[in-house]
Each structure stands twice: as C-alpha cells, then as structure tokens.
Length: 142
Image (cartoon, rainbow, N blue to C red; front, side, top):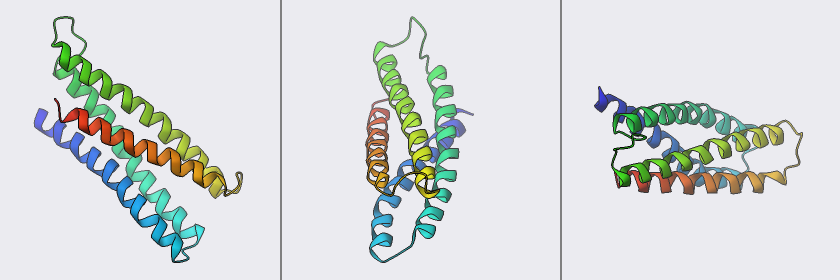
C-alpha cells in the first residue's frame, strides 16, 4: 500500500513541478507570437485544475507518509522530523501562494485588476516553483 501512496505523491509532484516548468517555458513564447488573453487564460485554467488536484494529492499523501514514517512521535528520529517539518512548512507556503495566484489571476482575467498585475502574478509563480524545487531537494534527503 505504501508504494501506491508514494507513487501518487511522486505523480502529484511531477504534475505540479513539471507543469509549472512547462508553463514557464511556453507562456512567454505564446505571448511573443500574439496569442491572446483568451488562449493564455484557457491554458492557465486547465493547468490550474490539474495542478490543484495534484496539490491536494501531494498534501494528502505527504501527511500520510509523514505519519507512517513516524513524524511527530517523541521517540522519532530528529533528522527525519526536521526534514519533514521543513517540507511541510514549505508546502504550506506553496498552498498559500497558489491561492493568492489563483485569486489574482482570476481577477486579472475578469478585468477587475489591471494587466500590470501580471508581473506580480509571475513573481508569485516563480517563488512557488522555487519552493517546490526546494521541497523536492529536501525529499531527496529522506
């Protein structure tokens, strides 16, 4: 069973980080070639839906694995506790940044915020990706 949980966790991470890198590489090219806001918005919403599901899977399977590994038990391994706590903290920030990105992105798409907010949204995305890569780096230490 735990192999399936780990598989789902890694699949979620692959979709989350791989999708962010893909969007990071593709969106500027599409913008440069004149793709309109409707096309870019559709891509953003579709990735957002897949990424949202992936993030829920990452959080759920991550909690399950942490408990399975003994995280939170007083007699547990201190290094394991530190790594899992750092990962959980980073994922918590990722969840918050994802919510901010979603809210701001939707408001820009609806015209409730000026297009100038796109740069701020891109900054949130870049930080989110960097944090995801950091969490992945920490996972390599488990």
